[in-house]
Length: 150
Image 1 (cartoon, one colour):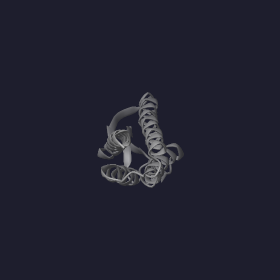
Image 2: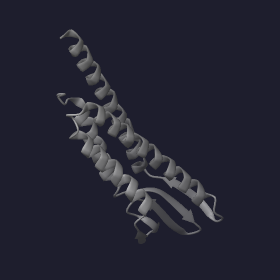
Image 3: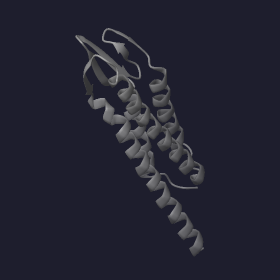
């Protein structure tokens, strides 16, 4: 069994960042005199927004997987695999945001595309997931070294 250390904190920070990201728009587009927002819980014309299923699903998946990953400390290999899977889902989410931004920006009549500060939350979440994976790797190495000494 591995004693949990800093990776739990990193994973918890990733969960909190993704939970906060769900409530803020990532991008704002200006079509003529109308503003449209794009985010997990806000997508559409300002004032008449709806939920974007792709963004919401990916945001929830990352947050839930990172939260579950905190409690997988008894099986370090499974925890590392789960963390790596969460990183891949996070990268897929960033790619999806970029693709949607380029598709919407390619439409005729867009005057301006403005990214919001909340767009940094998925990026920071992925960074904290990578730090957690690195800490798990150090734990795995420490376990191997201690097993060799016995």
